[in-house]
Length: 157
Image (cartoon, one colour):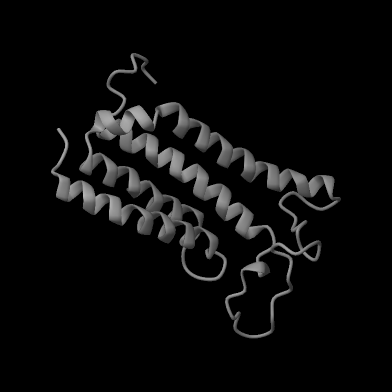
């Protein structure tokens, strides 16, 4: 059973704000409280909003279990790949191979309070993004399971 047009319109208006706020938390995790887990959880609440505004069956037709499983796998592979790439650069496992290597996330941190420069994180923002992708997939699967979105799959996992 889906909600009224008013609830659907409200969900359609709120959805971009929830997604932008979640991505903001993920990307700014090395500068402020937050990070990949918290941002991924916020982004996953968008799935709940869709399931409240629309029916569970409508959401499950566009957002399948395999998409969320692939998201979870991609996040885990990006996380471990970031750590392993340090070994190929001659550093320790999880070594900061981005430091002083290019324009993205390699700017040295200024002395004192960080003015909010996103380029100062080294590998930490990459790890936050990986965790955010993984948490989005994992929490999305949990939400679908708890709200009955996997009822017709036929497999017991």
